[in-house]
Image (cartoon, rainbow, N blue to C red; front, side, top):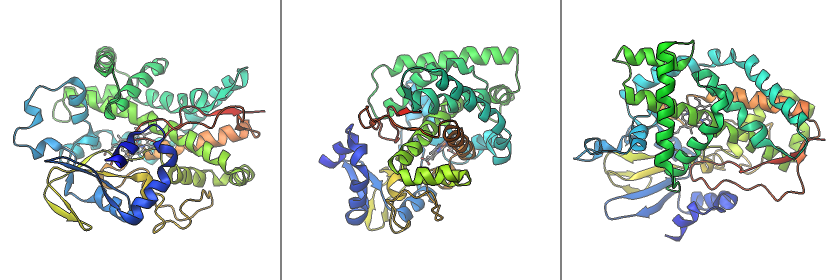
Length: 400
Ligand code: HEM
């Protein structure tokens, strides 16, 4: 099981792409771990990943596969929150939950947010300009931008963003079994939401939380637990990933100065650069878990009922059977059919928002700081040791 341990080591992300390539060539349906009753698999080829994410034979709700459902036994708060997220349920619950929030994330609705996103970016750039010390593109820009946007959309006070950052880091680390104090943090997060819900019930606003509260009160559409799960999901998914999109794409541009020049010469390539950033350093490395509903053959491997199957999104997006010169970062690429936002019914709800935030971020940063470059005095940036995601710990830059 040496290879499996490797996947969880802190320096794994750095050498991950050659490792994925060798899996695609020699062992594309990779047995990550095997226990008596359950095996865990990683799917690495583009076509297989799409098939996995689309097929109904792999389900999200693991409890359906057990005779005594985990729903019948006492659960900690965190498990309950996760089990009721739309990301972790199957139709018809998934369809019902997604329908409730979909209108807020349609491309047309999101487009209306552009002026506000630009204002927030301008404000952050002003603060960077006023800053004397070193600039960390993550702390000073890539993190605050999406968290302020999603907070405003939901109707949670943006000034509490550092709390969300802490709680969401804890929850993500807990999904890697690395968090120590997650019980306290999850409790703090739900207490915070309880207070906020009370405030919004008394004085509804024109925001997503007030509307979901109304839906909860009217029954039928979502219950109390689902309401908490929805908000936690939207806060976490709404910023953790977009931070990585902005910072990873900037990092790829720093690593490829010719591509940076091309973009600076022609900002009409920005949307393309964002798509290439999504493909090249995919912010979400692995899909969330799916479970085999029955025994089956999957491209030559025998997968048993209850086995855990993960799609390696990063690997699929570098599959040379799909993308020409897959390991090259090329912002003029035309063959964009990456799976950075997933595929099938759980395709990312926030994709239009993430794309818009990415585009605004790049345009604003590169116009304000045409000389922006990596701070050479710092060590090479480190990838965060988070299994599911690909994101940098810090990205120190010089701007003049
Ligand atoms: C689902 C990636 C930004 C909300 C997903 C999935 C991926 C993904 C890969 C599917 C996971 C799976 O099938 O296991 C990304 C990336 C983003 C991003 C790369 C940024 C670059 C956002 C934003 C939101 C969001 C800004 C804001 C609300 C969601 C939700 C789901 C989801 C709610 C679950 C959808 C469902 O189950 O139907 N995302 N995401 N994401 N994402 Fe995103």
